[in-house]
Image (cartoon, rainbow, N blue to C red; front, side, top):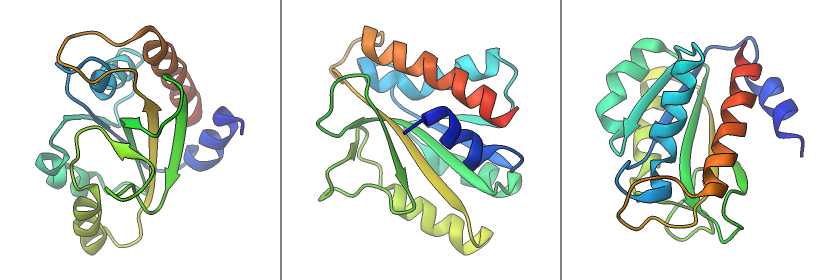
Amino acid sequence: MDLGRYLRDRLHGRRVLILCLGNPLRCDDALGPYVARRLRLRGVKCVIDADGSPESFLYEIIVRRPEVLLIVDAVDAGLKPGDVIIVEGDLPSPEGTVTVTHGLPLRMLLDKLGRVLGALDVLLVGIQVRSTDYGVGLSREVRRAADALVKLLVDAIA
């Protein structure tokens, strides 16, 4: 799949909100805050750095009324570190093959948003982690994938 084309097709010309999740003190789990910071440096305003608490931004998401909620998070999908995975619609659950690294029940958040906003197009862009041990700094593979994702997102929503 051509990720750049996919993102352009799904995001261009729509009200997009990018919700970045992660813990900056857990190595590759810092992916979300890293992507949010890089997007802001590139002038992207439709981004929220939710750290590990997206429920704290429920009101802000509702006020912004996005058509597309794109969630960026570190995942463990049994892939090679730095590999990118896209999940549409039904987000991962504990029994699934893709697990978000913070274990937050995203489905609950999305159910609440759906009750208020109605139809909401939800995409999870996950990057396979190498490590989520305590420590700072992304692995080389995850940083490379994150930088490529930032460029693709900037191009897709421009």
